[in-house]
Image (cartoon, rainbow, N blue to C red; front, side):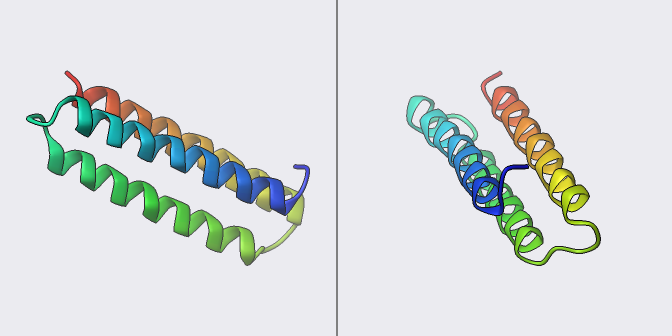
Length: 89
């Protein structure tokens, strides 16, 4: 990991992409599953809050801690994108 600042920027960028896709979905399909899209946005914002808390309060060895945060970020964002894809079907 390069720095804590870069990790925070990555978290913000990826979370904003998920939220942007949810908003695009809601704009393109106003009659489809609006409540589920809003729930996904809230779930994604909760993930952001949890990850930022973990970044700001490291435990144990720093390198392993931040590597685990980054892996959790990628897994969480991937899951969110899969849920958005499932909403369109």
